[in-house]
Length: 347
Image 1 (tube, rainbow, N blue to C red):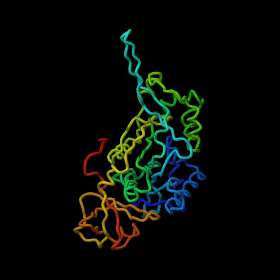
Image 2: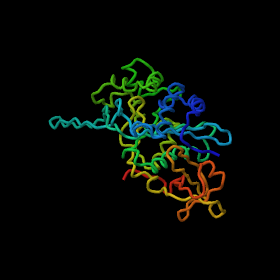
Image 3: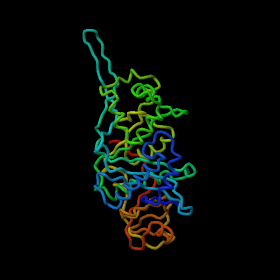
Image 4: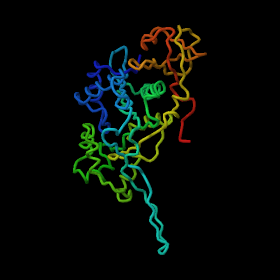
């Protein structure tokens, strides 16, 4: 059975093995033991509430309880851009007109922006290829929203998620090839490695700071602005179903879209509900899968189950109670794994 839980220091080997399967484009989960070890240390301190709330990085792993193997990871960072600039391009419009000549042109532009500074960030979502079936990906991604719903006071009002931008079969980014490489004389994979080492702000500072006309880019680069990597499209759809949407911000390197939402408007805050754990009975089963979360911060855990809340109680079998580290009478938070409505968009 699969369980999502707060990471522990003993998970570093499993996390490193998982990171070695990640391709280019995900800067927050690189296969570097030293960097991952430092991140695990911060994550453990975050769950233990030993560091300031704005410094926290809540890193979760998905574990196959039968094998004892780490098969997935995801995270929520409490705030971005508070110590070094957090850059995006904001898509805008410039109008050039002349009444005398009868000319009116409307041109798309890219503005280097720090607008999203201070936002909480969903990041580091990765599932082992052998487990990309059924509802495993949905469970991994959506478990973070139950965490936010349980602890909304730990997060700012705005939540963002940077989506991996388009790359071709060879791992090249048309956007980087048309723009970034001219300023740094390096390929996309090298720039990607530098950002994983904390060099993103350094690179961004060397990018042109004046508005860029999209029309000056190659046709291939223009086409991929706001487009996601083929492997990221399912993750984007999941986030949109939870209430996140694209508002015109893209990554400065690969032009992948940045989704955002108000925390108070997330599906998890509207639809999740608290329930008391009870002994399992046949009548407690549902046709739908539900996510159920243990409420403690240091040992936050989530499983998928066919049990569902009924009049403030949820009947869980002993195996599921053991996985959640909870007992009869303990409170849990539950939400349907698949949204009741097809999707949520901006209102």
